[in-house]
Length: 245
Image (cartoon, rainbow, N blue to C red):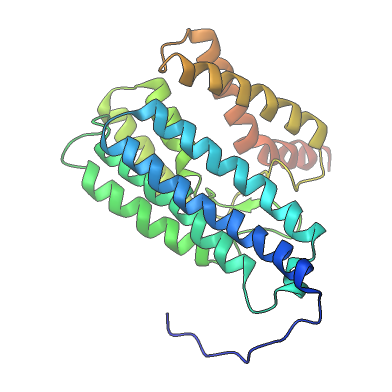
């Protein structure tokens, strides 16, 4: 919190325009409140409900950016940092609440679960502070701190505790490995395919949550295949290009 004070900037925008711009910040901050409700559900062991609320936070995160750009929030409300606010809310929804769920799920080895939970929180905080977290072409660098998604697959697959424990440990390590992971929205290459797969993924996840993760192997396999595409797409394209070089 040791930030140097910055001078107060007075916007020349009309009061109604400033109010509209500030409402976007309120909308972004609402994600933190949604995360708190998700945590309430997690503490009670209502895992599917927790993921529904984390999904609501994802929707907020997907909408607030375009709204902010459309209303030129950075210029109209110069005293409020939308970037910092977004990172704070994202850390709570993408890292902190999922870290609790992963630790308290009973799906990891009991002796390792608290240590891995701490590892998730610490690595996630460091990742969000890394100025290199995105490449020039808008790929994420390393495992992008999507612990809400990692937690979803943990509950979805329900693997033996030793396998799940090793998997979570590997994801923590991969946070610091410089490989590219596609950003579903901002990466232009194959965007049509990526968005189509994300749409199918969203529908299948909703089916899984509606059935409290009691779904067939076909749905699980499809969800895993889409995850592999998102994680490995860039590496596969680079590999093919290297063969053709």
